[in-house]
Image 1: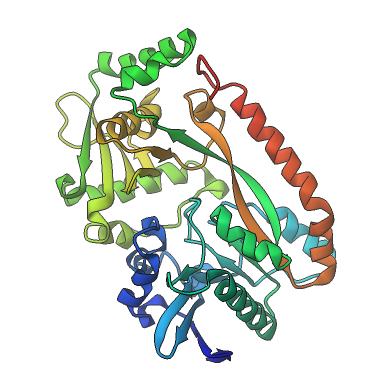
Image 2 (image 1 turned 90 degrees about the horizontal axis):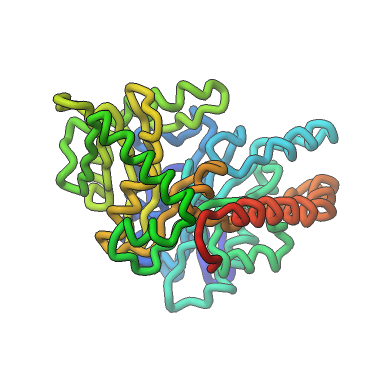
Amino acid sequence: MTTIPTLTATWHDRIADIDPDAWNRLCSGRDVPFLRWEWLHLLEASDSVGSGNGWQPCHLTIHDQGRMIGAAPLYLKAHSDGEFVFDHAWAHLAASMRVRYYPKLVGMSPFSPVTAYRFLMAENVNQAKLSAAMILEIENYCRRRGVSGCGFHFVTTNWGRIPESMGYKVWVHQGFVWLNPGFTSFDEYLAGLKANQRRNVRRERDRLVRRGITTQCLFGREIPGSYFALMYELYARHNERFGQWSCKFLTPTFFQGLRTVFRDNLLLIAAFEPDEPTPMAMSLLITAGDRLYGRYWGTWRDEEFLHFELCYYKPMEWMIQKGIRLFDPGMGGVHKALRGFVSAPNYSLHKFFDPRLHGVMESTISEYNQMEMRDIAALNSILPYKRRG
């Protein structure tokens, strides 16, 4: 425990030691589920996150006369896996310079490349001043512990300006988003596409219908309890196909925990073969407010276009029916752009405490960012809409 003038800063090696109501009050209903106490606790309690897998919780809370007014989910990292900010080039550069790169401190919701991260703060405090005080506390902690640097990943744009003003370097990353301007049906969305792509989408969906594959959207309490274990099996099978590039970070216990944690925010889309009661494939998404987030998917049998149906078209159709405005489908490639997902920049902020390594980033990061923005523009140039806008 240390003291910032009039404030008390406390470090926690597990979120279970932090009062959940006090933490969630700082979220104030504005945040996606991935920053709330229950989500972060489920990651730790399920052993998806912990010192044994290179994600040591290291959360910071700030109290004023016993009242929690600030909090930051933070993790000491022994590797770069699961961050979706691919900094391996910086790790290799550090090794060539004989600069230790790990451990590093990362602020994010683990395994969640979702633009949401910021410090959680009470509404009646000066948020810029409190953020600055928390960043200074974090840097002092890192230097005391011999931590190589600190990064905040997938930050909200407004909050990100505060660490940037304190010497953190902004790194741009390409992401996707689909905006619903108020469509009344999926056909209305299709009507805005160029003729070739409109035909392609209809052909892809019709192919599945002709093969007798049906789909079902299950929301919240509609999801059968047995589907959570099945979702883990599909998630694991999907990731095993990618070998060292796998994104298999979550345990079976995590998926079982979703039966109670944020159950009312879960959308599960299941695909069925003819006369088969057990799903052949499923996708799991999370909704909060006016947003839908694609998370996990898997299938027992490869079927052309099934991924597009469960992870793009069916979620888009569902959110149009529900009046949801924004769909973040997760990481991906050019196939998303060809189906109308717009490329947009995400941001991370970084500071290395070795001045040589930080100096290299300072002198080169703008070139990195320019290349990324060119990639974003290139992806947006192939969007299949009749009109830009």
